[in-house]
Image 1 (cartoon, rainbow, N blue to C red):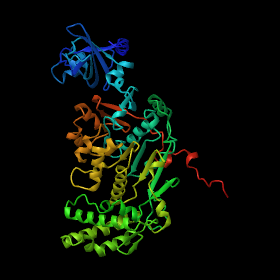
Image 2 (tube, one colour):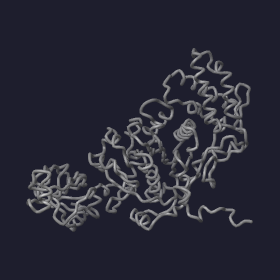
Image 3 (tube, one colour):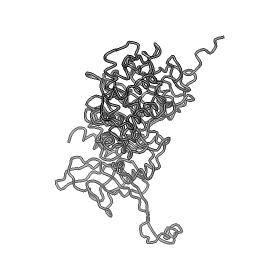
Image 4 (tube, rainbow, N blue to C red):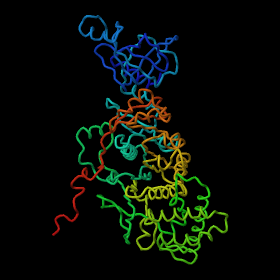
Length: 561
């Protein structure tokens, strides 16, 4: 027995037994029932241990988590007997028992515990052994148990060494999916687990709904003492993200590129693509993508036009970002669409493409011009500088919430394409993307789906880890969800909880997922054989303007006459 085993045994022996292994129910190496002693409590999510002796008189420790508790009368036969027992007319005893799902056996001797063996709550090193935390070399705090003990994830299943990616599912507005994803990022950056790599590690967050994520750099003025105490238990400092870049789409119908935001104006940079960038990076397929249209002929037209524009960008590069197409200098996306419309037959080079297909492409191109054309232009000198430069900040928030759905698809596709095409040894980058069911749908097709799937399957080898969030994992491409090392759920719809995508949840966990409160998640990870319920504190950064401290949001011109 090692020194750690000795210490774990001492920690375990110091705890008072809360019960014994039940003899009226089967006890197996994988699960058992506990008869709770009078005067003791056993609750859901409690971690317990049993020490049993095998035939060679070796002490075998069974660690497990309580996933169900129940009480019932012994000695009664009918439901109405409960009233008679209450009135003292019928003798009966209350049976208080809990079901334990085994998480670890030390040493690995898989025989059943003996009925009557004492069951104890675990603390200290015994707690770490129960959840394999003692075998994690680099531990990332991911929340607290119900009784305030830290829960960890293994960094090697987040940074790509042994696995990567996280899938977060739950009901919109209640499951706190994006909040938990940003909490995971904060823990990664501020816990010290990344070591010397902290400065080089990046995060890209796509802000899809509202302006909640545009305040990550501002402290939360509404944190209570209880909130701060929970941060202290996690061993994390309380505060905002320290290095944040905010990017919002350039405003439409405005010549000078300025960010199109609502309440947040300070410190936000505009972004767009010049026509040369659009052509050189072959971003046309994101502009005309249609997930509901699987006609390959239409995709063929888009590919031919994109290749034609890429050659034009190569043949006549312009430092100002304009594009020379067959002798016509284009400064805006609408001008480029006009040229493509007129010369589409010439671009296709006599390929046998039906006229209706060409017309369908033209319609989609015109529609794209009205929805995202303002994001591709070079009609002002400032357009060259309106870029998303995530190398300057640890966390870059890319705002999408004011864009049409088609424009959102274009931005996400363009950014992820550039991310996956980085040269050389690139720093580890975490990507937070909400509404994953829209970008990687199970049914239908889109170019975004291909890129997201590429990240899920190859991202870990390229230093890209995806934290995807969605209301329904059942509507996300199977391989994207299957490649996620961490599977996380908040509040789930009852029907959704029964889908096969949540097979990692126990029966009790599925039932509990339908009643979870905001700030509580169920996390499944590779090293722990059962899902764990964790809670996380209120963010130390503001999630809306009203939470920003007065000193952080005051008018910079206040007091000036």
